[in-house]
Length: 307
Image 1 (cartoon, one colour):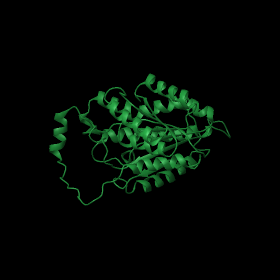
Image 2 (tube, helix red, strand yellow):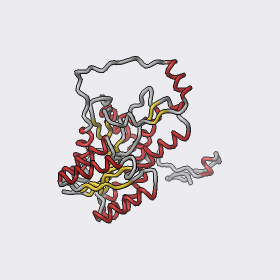
Image 3 (tube, rainbow, N blue to C red):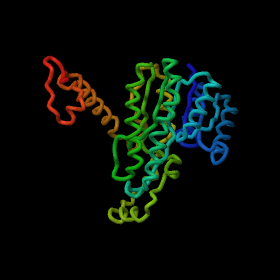
Image 4 (cartoon, rainbow, N blue to C red):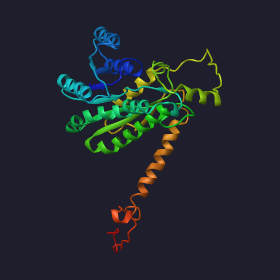
């Protein structure tokens, strides 16, 4: 079945591959990116040319996930053209390099604004339509760094931790409307994201960390095959093709920096489900009133919670 699909961050990397893969599969894809008529004019033109050559239904729209008017404008245009929104792929994001202390607060706020709040802004814009349709799929492309925090790169990993939390919360909340939320966690892939990473502004602090614990020089095996970013696009295609209600909350993609992450997720889900069951017990189902929180003596009501 053909779906109307919105994909963010399509100027390069995963986004470009996701858009092409889904359009090739027969879906009507709206590939979006920032600066459509400036720095991203060339990738936008390349996508349009590819669609014409392949006879694929792919339209390119301007969308900046950090701007309310930009997001709403793209969503409105998609609805004007397609009349519905079946799938949203929240892929747009930027990496960051450097110790957490070395980033200015402005850099931290900007990266959270793009990597965590941006996908939430897009989801907020499409949810009224999906709730009215009583169906839809929202995919969040995060990272295995959102599950396993490394010794460095803490700012980027923190934004992915935040996005994981927002996506999982949304997963529970919108299921009642027939809307699926899925998280795709790519490992490490050779994409332009690395070269576009934000660098920490405070060079003296970066130097202090580097001198205190120099990173060992590791040489990659030239005979080793690099992981193919197409794996991420294929994982998302599988999610799109699955029937509603049958999609896993989390999918790990890729062979590098992924070992053990699926097992981590399984153990997390087991512990989470146990905690959820515990919270259903009468001794846990207590809502504290302001007076109780302030330490005032409250006489409990027999057979019920304190009043």
